Length: 380
Image (cartoon, rainbow, N blue to C red; front, side):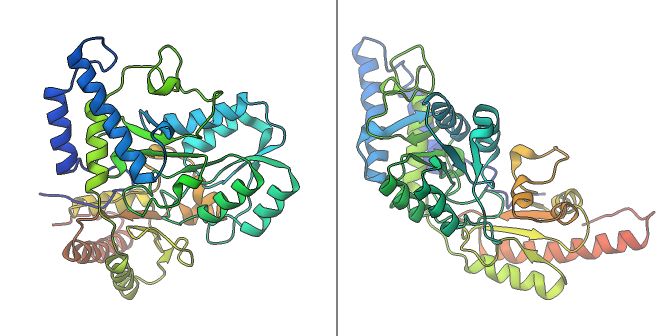
């Protein structure tokens, strides 16, 4: 049985453009770009052309582009640089960040972290944020562009403008944003982090924007690669595949998502949408189902031919409640019924309609199962 994929916020399939670029580079541009001979120099040229392409996309100088192994490495490196910078004041962290920011901040910064207050919809409270920044108690900020679990879009443009005015560094994890939404304006952030596998590129490669001049920033030591920011031989096929995938990515519309929600609500009473009042990514829905744990929904929907998520993929298997929902004040028992649906640019109207049918069928099956504890769920 073919499975219909609705977990794009976890990872995306390698796009045709990304696959073609990776295969070509693996065949023709596999040499170490730092080697001294001419054929290696040709690979270096391709690598730098990819850097320039990304720089053009973000309207920045190519010196701001650093290739990484992904957003987790990049996020950790930003937090680590703030630990070593000897800044006075607190570091303002959005409590709904990805674990690669939250755990790094807790471990490296400890009591220097100041958790930013949220509105009920999961967005950073701008009024409270501005008061903290203008008071001088915050010396650096990390707020993502859009949340991986809920799709809620943070007011990152306003935050970037304020941080620029006050002259404090702002890190924006744009992993769920890049490749799905316009990147215009992200160049106003001091640091931007992203990873290829969220927009049709390969796993294990990403990039980040760094400030024009940041001599203290370092990801890995031991070589002069990546403008001295990150030592290690670059993954040229991965980088070329990533850039090709980004250039081929398409922005989507929330229309199909909203039709799906209307259909579900018409058939299943009590469904809640996390962050519904906030602007959200066009591809993402975080559903709090009226009954039954997330794992039962995910497994039953997979039997029905649909792959969905239950929050952050990196947290799957942990018994703790989603840190995102916890920060938003959702009770643990309710948070345990989260089902995340995230589509791709090629997800069709019929895919969405079929997923709605499956949700309704699974709900009926789960309800029937509850009424008859000895009954085995079987979905054709």
